[in-house]
Image (tube, rainbow over all chains, first blue to last red; front, side, top):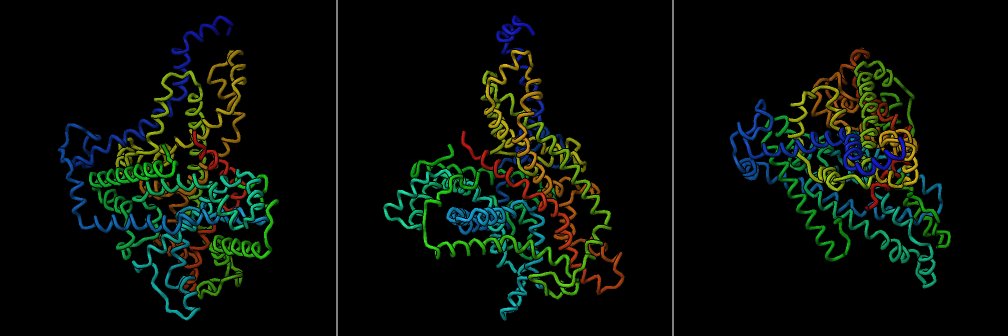
Length: 310
Length: 302
């Protein structure tokens, strides 16, 4: 190309160069349009009586039923149980699991031996990389009647418990396993925030007579406060979406009472059962509740702590 | 990075007792994370009798690899392994390519309508149609029960596009300008200059993609009734979680008597877990630093 066409190019930037750039993006834009936006449009079947074989998400050849599927779901026999389980399983994970990575990162920050510290950290990430199916397989074999958990119970003179068929134990099994799988990985952001603290702050605190615990409380902990708030807002925004992919793997009909959540019900009854309109309505309902929770949490956080997502 | 660059502890003194307690707690945490894996491994290589009697806790007892022999002979397992390799290979290449194609134009400040494109990309991160409309779409497109149902819907990751874009913006403008002066088009600049110097970020998203696809099973559960197309995780799901006929069939063929069959059944599950997780465990030390890099890059607020 010559210098002249350089100038020409600059003048016709909007045409030729924009077109070229959009052409580069075209596959991505098309993919997102088809696989992200078309399903959003598909939500309209929540307000119809859709059955397979009908024209694809047709607006015309359908009987509109308004909020029938929502009302049916609210009045259905499983509504209370599903909402309670979904909320409780997420809530337990938040209540018992949220502070674990925070404490773990504070502990890591206090370890001096570099190799040892690195080893502990690396070990703690490992479960994050293992598939849900493998973790579920391990958990199921451990909590079996003749699994290792019961062997230990017997060793201490207890009687074996049917952990996998007794609804009362499911929330604990789910919560403990979820914490085990995620705490190490979740600590990364906290550790990164702490590593950027100016070492002189610790020195100054020591001059003022702060012991290590006080340094941790007054320097390390405040340094991760923004991260804590942001992650807390996200967690609250997900209170109605327990990890249904994992629950699907470790539950069974005998523990539905405490284990069946909206996501698993949606898969079982909506997808396998062919209740497409109902399933879509339930999914939409959850999205709206989750977004409302996120919005409230964000607003409160911005008002009282100055940390917010937007 | 996650470790402290300038170790603040160097200037922080404390009692040895406090240190000892901290090291002990860290050791216990380590034990809790690693022991389940160790347990599965030693169970898988001990003798079936000891495994069935739950006698193995700290060291393998009566070394025995018969479970592995059974698995290796199972053609379904090898089918699943090769399917997984196809999904991982195709998926990763497409993921990287799409991330680059999506990210580059967004770094050109003069691009008209850039804000709208960014909004177009970000909305699906927070809002989606959900399981059933996606399922109906895949069905309608004729992808259902084909390998494409696994590869195509997942080939664009908006998260990856954001990561790559963040990296691209760190490339000095002078480099791009000199290429333009030499008469390069955007496509030439992208493939001849930008991609070759973007290997670090491409490694990050490739590894995210490899681990993600290797571990995924739910999309196969939903989209692939045909067993022949199942990836490794679905094989694992059928054998270990559903405990379907596969397990009994697998061991019945080879072990003639019922007692041996029953004994090896328990062990077989452990061996399958080890066999399908081994590649992840072995490569883990190499990829974990890339993973951390990605997690930190992604957390940057813009």
